[in-house]
Length: 249
Image (cartoon, rainbow, N blue to C red; front, side, top):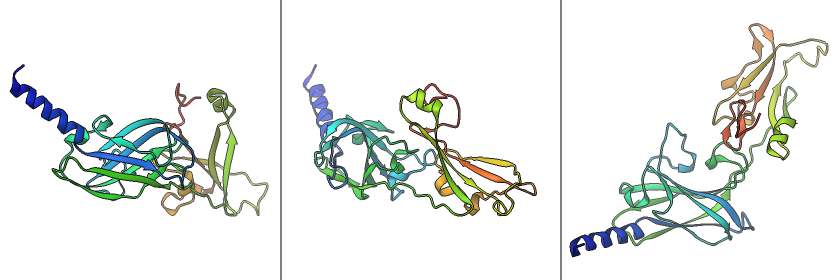
């Protein structure tokens, strides 16, 4: 192997070693125990909150590393060793990016960036230039909040333990939803009503969609109806209410 080839290889290895590095961590203020799981680095040139990109309409660069027992405040380095899409950090297009890191606690949310309980950093604006020795620092200091549900006289939250799913996963599994009652429900206790089941797709949630004007439904033709807003949320995203070797029956 001649000297020119060796020099080129050395240059490539050095370039890959130093190009586009990030040191990420999480604050003890939001999680006092070690973290084990996936850590994701989101970048976008357009979306000011890259972790909230709506896939598949948006496909921004994303990078993943897995850690075990990462202590609060300890750093994890993102470089070309990270699992990457669409390419490695050293090959990313030059320019300015909005950047966020998310620590995925795998608590069952539909998408990692918006899953309640996950840890995330504030957005930084980073410019990738020819300074390959720069190491950018991100610290997760925020927690995705749990969505709240406000019950009213005619809108009730429903949560039931599923025996089938609990047996399948060897732990208690609850299926949830919301029930919307017709206006005359309490005045006519002996009346019967048809029931409409509203099944939302990936990215939706019964806590925000139940009873909203955009998705309003309370009649079957001209007949007042009870509406049940179902929750397809599961650890893998959305169950689509289908029997599955992964999600269960």
